[in-house]
Length: 399
Image (cartoon, rainbow, N blue to C red; front, side, top):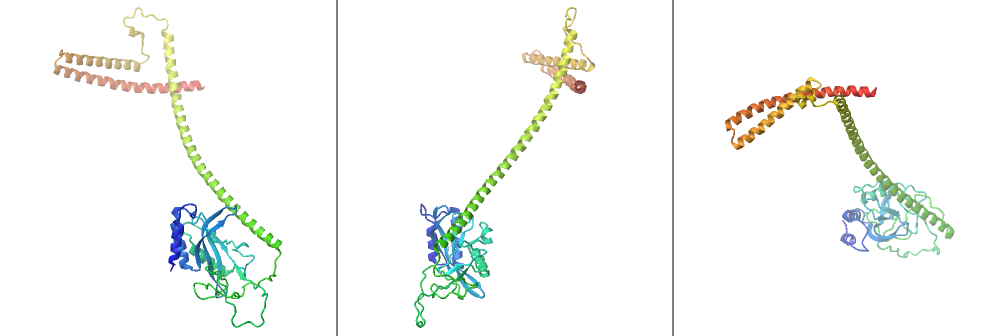
């Protein structure tokens, strides 16, 4: 069961505002609280805290962490691996940063498949982190299983500067590590590791421990630390560059989709313009054909005089039967239209009785309908003839 102090601590930290607030987005703070509560319930040896984390670029930020030990079982005995789980600014959308935190009496195994010399942990569960399904409890369970297969730490025995050949039956009291239980090697059968233990309570190492000299060359220590720092910086730069390139690729893919949509729109507009151009070319051919007809008529009738013609309309001769029929139908239609207009005026002034007006209008309208129907049929026949003539002219111009 989770301690009320842990819940109160998390509520206080995640509800803070202002410069001292933790840098997590508001929509994820509740999920962060739930995951830390579940982690503390499942592993009481891990304690939520806040601490200052320094990035490779020198920037410091106040973050949440879970510090303590992870139990692992090796050769039937349970040991505790001290770790620190940092919840980075982008958590939980991105995985946490896990470090093995050895004490001064522990050494990181080199090489180790999941822990680099600086203590940074790299396991598939962190690489395959999926929001919001991945969580801290499953991460610790995965670490416990992998560390049990291949422990990342082993103890080193330091020489006793003041050996006592006759040890006292009452040895010195064990050191107290306070609230930070880093106790790799304290084999136990309970879920929570002991808080205090004697200095020589570490179990035998599963790997042969190297001979450690009492002093190390400062230049070698500096060189090793510098190499580890450079490796961490390179890894950080590679990860940052990868994120930047992935964002650029995502933007390019989005731009590609927009360009494809624009291409489809332009192709559709181009097809419409081509269809309109073809229609205009057909109209142009029709206009050219009519222009030829009118120019021919003007040439044939140029210089003719109207003198001697009883009717000026005789100057306009119909070229074929359809034209003569269209002219007659149109003239009869217009004449009936004028007659109907005159009848309306006569009815308004009372010159024509109403019943006679109705009979006349009915008869004239029936006759006008037949003239208009005949004109429509003649117009359709003329249109077919014009299309045929246009096709012949087009072929003639093309040849």
